[in-house]
Image 1 (spheres, rainbow, N blue to C red):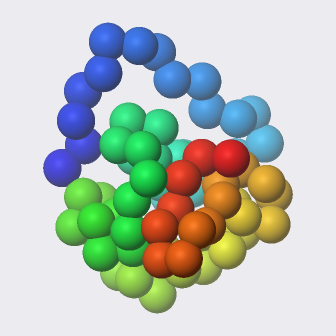
Image 2 (image 1 turned 90 degrees about the vertical axis):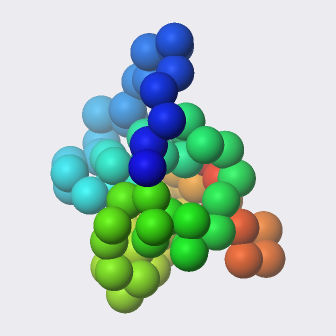
Length: 72
């Protein structure tokens, strides 16, 4: 479940994938989160999430600390 925020979120313009944008928005609204929390919140398969997270990490959009992900 995605929670609502009173603040507008700016999605980086170089994010083209709708799924990558969803992950970015989820992280921006929920802070540091695990792959399981992403899976439950976005109703996406872990295999897809790992691919998206790896790409976002390579682009320095997110960071990984152990098993937790957050915006960079």
